[in-house]
Every structure is written in structure tokens, then in C-alpha cells.
Length: 449
Ligand code: GLU
Image (spheres, rainbow, N blue to C red):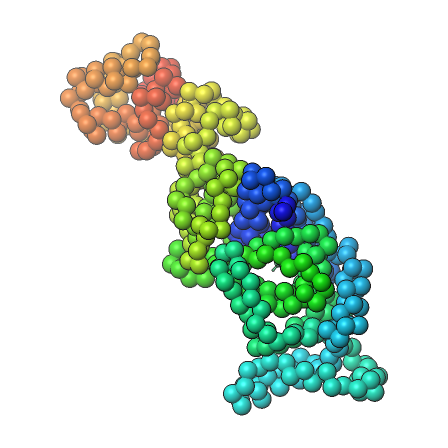
């Protein structure tokens, strides 16, 4: 069997870490299937049936974010171009008596729900519309009412083997018949999603566990339409570092924002691909490597903890492991390509790629030296070796120690402050030959060079 999955975002906002995790896990699953010789197609399906809320800008943003993360798609669709298929399917369901018109207003439904609750009954739609005669309907329409359309559930236990949750069941008798088409004619996502999954040959539906109940209804719709019913995986939702649901904060956790902050895509994909699994939370070499190790069997029901501190750690890991060839074009773009030796010295100190600018400034100047003891700086200048080879730092600091009597921190910290203007930074022994004698001498004299 050839695996085909889809990611179906609505272009009504920017992608955030929650929906990107869904996209990523779909992508990883497809990639893993491809490695295993089972095809592996990833479909991007823009869920833009809500024409009023969807915008081309958000659609473009989704594509940009996915591409930036390395999540390329094999096929791409817009649901807004497939209304004919939805109309035809709706007609079939109407003819089969599975889709029926209802005329209640929101207020009327609310009132009924309150009555049900006050009697201790579950607030399920009572199917009153099913007993409307053609005359009743004509009368309601003459009043100016437009119908919304509900799918008539079988009302039974719908069961499936969920790839992430194991055996899953939904009792559709405990659910209201879902509205598939609103009174303004808008298709809610439930029906288009099933129609597309069938037409596009989607084999696996992978999404968040907030869709479990929908799945019960959708499996009935798949069956009513003659299927085939795909496999399902519902992933535990994201929680924050304290274990609280992240859903309310997701809006502020956009990929665009992380990108702006300078976070590496591989740090994001490693984090989102591995939280909530039994894999160690380490940065992956590539997203292909993540896909290679992907398995739903590693994903339990435990919540996936999205922790910014972990993301930061993975980001640093990614930079520390980045080789010069990968860094070179980005260094050049920042005007910081000072060669491979420079990159090797600074990369263990990077938290964000952009930190490299500050480090390049230490090498190239200008740096305002911090001199706390002028006599110490003068003494250090007097014994500064003529040529600065690989062992310059140890030779020089030994001489400064002999001349001034300073040792340990009292020896190294003032030199660091003078040469770099900061109390922390890359290894001094490696930095010194890069900065060069002329600049070091200038900084020891108190010059901003
Ligand atoms: N647009 C839907 C959502 O984002 C798609 C759900 C699905 O994957 O079926 O919730």
C-alpha cells in the first residue's frame, strides 16, 4: 500500500507550533514510508471553504513557513476550487436521506439545550426537523428561513485502531447530528475533508486529539459514501513547560515569530517531532533523519511538552554542530565570513546564529576595551609576543603573570575585558591569533579598535 497523508490548514492565520507539529508528523510519517519503500506522499490541502475568513496572504504565509521548515509537499489543493465535488456529494447524501434540512435558529437551539440540561438530559439535537412535512418546510422558507443541513448519524459505537492511541471508540448515539452545511451555504470542514480524503486517496489522517469526536462522525460519512475509510492517528495536544494546555497561547507562538527571532528550522522540527515520544530530545541531523526514526509506537498518550527552554537548547546544539560549509553563505550574508577558523572558534558559543555578529566584531573591531587597571594593561602590552601563533595565549599569559604577579581569574578576566570588552565569550586562546597583534596592542593602549 502506498502511503498518502495530508495537512489541511485554514488560511485564517499564521501557522503556529501546534499546527506545524501536525504538518511535521504527517511529513515525517510520509518520509518514513518512503524510506520503507511504501510510497509516501504529503499533500498540502488549503482548507479555504470559508471564503470570508481565508486570505491569500495567510495562504502564502503557510507555504513560506512550511518551505522554510523543509516540509515540501508533493501535491497541493485548495478546497475552494472543489465546491462542485462537495455539491455532488451533498446531493448524494440528501438523496440517501443522510443529509436533512433544519430550520432552527441558534437561539431556538440554545433554548432547547437549556431545557434538556435542566431535565438532566444530554444536550443533543432532538432531530425535530426530521418530522417536518414538505408543507412545513415550504412555510418556513416562505418566512425567509434558509435551511442548514445535518448529517444523520447511525448512532452506534464507531471503533478504529488509532495509530497513536490504540483502540478508540466514539459512541455517535451520544452526539448531535453534525451540521455539514450552514444556512448561508458554507460547508463546514467535516464534509469537504471526507470528500477530499476519498478523492485524493488519503490513506492516513494524522491530526490532534481534539478531532477524536469528529472522527466518529467522519467515519460514518466515509462509510455512507462508500469509503474507503483511512487509518487515523490522533496525537496528544501540546502542553507548556508547566503541563498546562498550550491551546490558548498558540496564537502567539507563530513560526513567523520564531523565524524572526532567529531560531533554526531544524531546532523547531527536532523539538516538535520528538516531544511526546520516547526519543531523546536532541537535535536531529536533518529532517530526513527525523523521518527515518519516526514511529507512532514511540508516541504514547503522554502530553507533548513544548518548552521554550528546550527549543533554545536544541537551537544551540544545532549551531554547535553546524559545519563551515553550511554556515558560510549565512556568515557572508551578515558580512561575518571570517573563515573556517573563526567559525570553529565561535560556534560553540552561539545560542542564535545572529550572535556571530558580535563575535565578528570582537575579531574585526571596533571594540571599546574595558581597562580597570592601566598599569596592568601597560605591563601586558610590554610582554605581548611579536608574532601570535597557536600557543600565543599561553606564552603571553605566562609572561603577564610573571611581570604582574596576577594569576587565575585576576590574570585572565582583565585580559578578556580589555580584548573583548565583555566578561564572557569564546575561548581566548583561539581568539587571540584571529584578532591579531595590531588590534590587541591598540586595545591594551585603550584604543577603540
Ligand atoms: N482544517 C482542519 C483543522 O485545521 C483540518 C482538520 C483535519 O486535519 O482533518 O482543524
